[in-house]
Image (tube, rainbow, N blue to C red):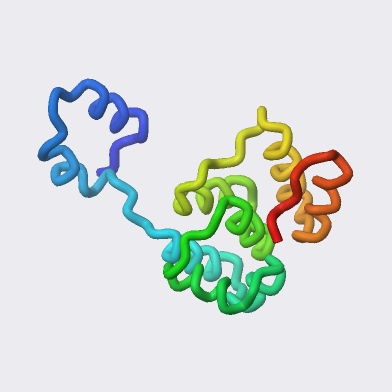
Length: 141
């Protein structure tokens, strides 16, 4: 049975050594790759890679390489993919987690605007216009 994240954190911080820890905790560790998470989101949202890539305003070849796990995209590129699905804020934070780029944080002004845009199901273009009108850096092109 998987332990909670808090329980795992406590074990890690209270241990003298972690030599055998990861072997013992295989069931509790999350080993999903970014490509696997994207595949799962395609199934859940009943959409295609091409649709997401197009709506994310990404180069087709680069987009497919991300879905295949051959490229490690930036945070902004992952955010564009989130809008391409579109994903919920929670799904987006998971996407950012699996991309190892840091989740959206509501106390960061730009992140708050992005969270709002995700919730409103804005497109990438609408989001960039929204960010621009609020003097925030747009999602990279």
